[in-house]
Image 1 (tube, rainbow, N blue to C red):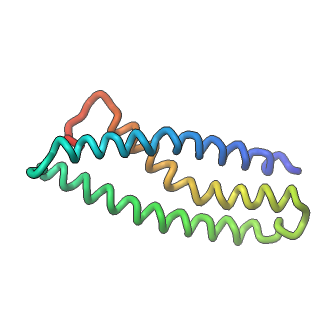
Image 2: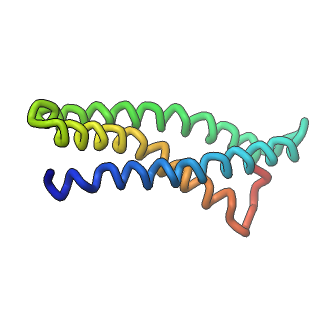
Length: 120
């Protein structure tokens, strides 16, 4: 197994671990913000709700696109040997998780910061 292949499982594990911590934080912040806004959300609250919806659709398409590109790039590795195929598959999964991971971690930082200018 080449050195590049040994990093793929570690990267995927790190991404999934960070995502497992970031996603519930973002959900908690946004749920609390929606509850505080109640029946009269501010324009900033409405903008955050639209942002929340749009980023999920975008992350979905980015994930599929990156997984497709990683799969095409790793196609030859699937036929070499089991370790190469396993590493290639892990790289495909890591590429798919990357957009969701980066957005969730960024949102957790943004929403969990000390300075909160918006309700959500």
